[in-house]
Length: 509
Image 1: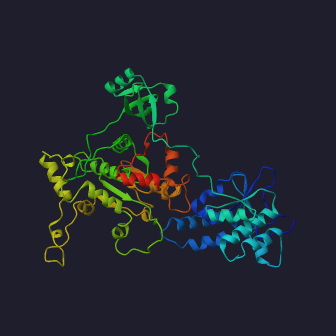
Image 2: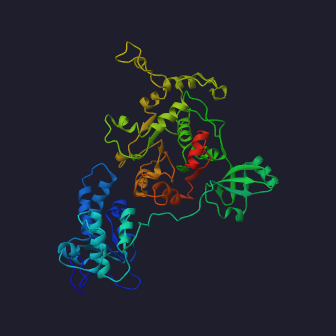
């Protein structure tokens, strides 16, 4: 077997056996998970030299997760491949596999020919593109070592092009959750009418080992009798289900009362208000009330006499729908405002500028002067805000909820600057969490200190990040890994409450 440039077939450390596979890693896999090198068990790993060039271009990104991951993988490769010999022959990994850097001699010497490279040049003639050069390197590995050789990439288009030239390719599957049919938002547990009556009077009930077997800790269920009577409950383990702990309503300081409008929202409100649950994941399509309920319950718990949290922190990934409009001017708050406009809309609903005309939404009078004074202090605009600098005292009025932002009770967090922080006594809402990678979600959650709570909300069906999907995004991955933990809960919202039009559009379009 001829000597190769980069990894050599004659003197390389690549393992050859009937069960061993050779995986060629694309740049996006390493950026997605810098530890991916150690997650292919005892198989061979090959990294084309073009990947190192792409990582070199990305490492200069100082404030992005991609830049940090590029620098991290550089450090890992520097430790594993300390000299030229290790680079050329490859090294053995602690997992039992091998790692090699591949230099494709067919690109170094264009006069050299092979059937695979001729096929590649005919189908993908532009070898100045990095993607095509990485595919060419994978074809070269396929020629030199026994099958199977598999190109691993998170770029769907690269997968398709690789298959077009006769190369097996697949996504990085290590952090994908199992494909399961999870359409139902909750399970129903059959009980007798007498058991249901006892549950209503005592607040708890043992459903038995058989009924409890498929349930996980803190799962929400609906108890149903043969007569059609129902009661929502939460599973606490050891066969015990308990009644939900729900107040009549929740409200922001100076705002209107908010009540759950369906069974799933009752589940969500129970989890949001339970201080024994430190992490909550919530799936829900547009209009199901994820943002409004999360914000209402968060503010409700920050201004009571014995408040659990010092304030509310809100963030979401900066990923645009459609073509990006470029850089945004202004301060951090001004830059983040377009991305967090849904929360400004929610605050406008919770603390309206004008009292609602419908009496069913009118806030109850607060008899305690202390509470009334605190509400006025948090919501009333400062005297200087009544006018505008250029309008003879007749400028645009300050919205009531803006006082919450100015006082620091509600803070806007940028995920790009969250690394290294320790977030204490805050109710942290991470919106659009389905746009993040599992590693990014881990980075955020590990910032949460004792006494804080984090809520991850999103819709796994609406993903704009090209490198995650419905099974590998951070929201779904986090739920799958944290399911059944005593301090974690999960709720899925199915019924839209925004409007009939929004509900029809979410279901039919």
